[in-house]
Amino acid sequence: MTRPAHAARGRSPYTARPEPGMEDVMTLRVNEYFGGNVRSIGFEGERGRATVGVMSPGTYEFSTLTVEVMTVIDGALEVRLPREAAPTVYRVGESFRVGAGATFHLDVSTPTAYHCLYA
Image (cartoon, rainbow, N blue to C red; front, top):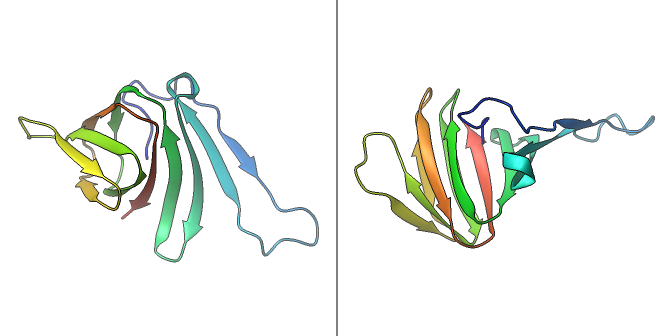
């Protein structure tokens, strides 16, 4: 997931680097948004750049830089995508796509885990 629409305020990026002799281990990037209520770990996977994260209950607005495909792993996300009048609820195993340069809104009623693939 990209940065919140209100820019990087509240974001605490940490990059985990391999210990000497473990250079073949992937590099992870840890992000925090909205005062720690949304946290993710970024990595380079088989299908490209991705994050896996968790969200506490709340209402969030995010803006994208690239196309993103989000899949709910646990919980549910009520999502209002650009040009959609009404939100749609996505549950475990369901995905949605957000275009590049878009802003979208999430309502989270229960702790939720997600996977985000950047296209």
